[in-house]
Image (cartoon, rainbow, N blue to C red; front, top):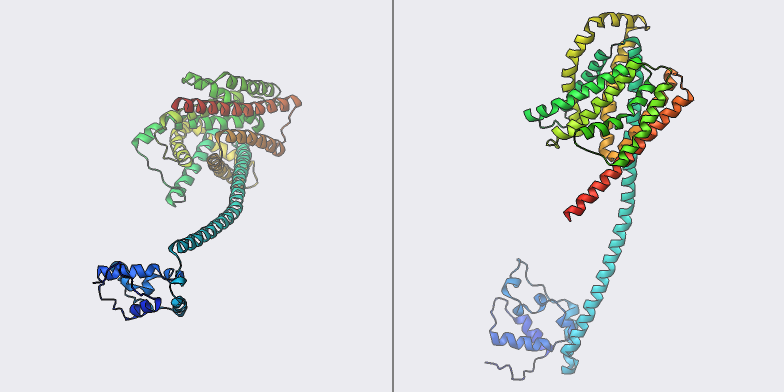
Length: 451
């Protein structure tokens, strides 16, 4: 048996000969394995850096050597030349420390190359992501502009044809019921065709829906009554006073706004009062029905927050659909009771005032279709905007509707009337900013308490 301390005349040529004649199936003894390791240390670095699986199969663990069915590859010619270069004797064998330093230098160079590649990839990814983010933001801005534009357009068309029908057929309860019917059928089509996901509802949901739907019916029908009595522009100026009702009725339901919110509604009150006093088509019936409409919509919002709090899985558009359907069930029987006996004569007079019957029927249908469309796009806009931004957008929508109605119907506007309308609309903007500030303060206080 060979001793580890016995100097053995191993040369790289002899080791190569033993490697070639070695049987890979033969299991080396521990002493012979250690001897080969001792000889391996004295080999040139070009041999040490080669894959052990290609040159020294006897030193490979069995698990690694048996990994796969491929045999060990033969030694390439360049490796043989490195082995031949070591025939000059022991002086040609590098020191172990020198070999380690060479390996360390190679590793450092590889690390530097990897860092350069990673930095280059990072720069490339940042350069590619910036245009993508910019294009995405531009796309979102265009989508929002399109939704808001459609919201304004649908609202203008609805108000114009709604007023045209009421000028010929002054029965707002039937017209409001028909508009709710069109919206209900439209939502039914969206749900049936799966263009809009059908919400999961229950008896508890319908019980919670009764209050908001009732006040929605009141808000819608009394707005139509106001449109039938006064000009569209005047009704919308009065409807800008909705924040006043929101502050007062919220206080009656236990929610108190800070002082700066109360102060923000004072311009609304002043502007609406000035516009009402100077309105050429002023009618007391049209004024108080517009105010009732404001109260109905505010109470709808308040009761929706309380009773529908547990049904957040229902989207805004689906909630609007179900509220519309239940509101129709509320409104139509009352409409029959209030106006039913006069509908036949009203239709005959309306048909006699237009060139063809389809002119009147077309206006009625357009009022129903665009009633739903402007509500649908308003919900889409609310999904893409913050509540404060939506309030500002709603105020600007009233300006667009007022201007369009004046251009279409030619309603006379006095300077003081225009000033009052402007003050009222400015007040709604101040109210939206004040409520947005109040929400931020509440969030800051809640974060402070939680921390």
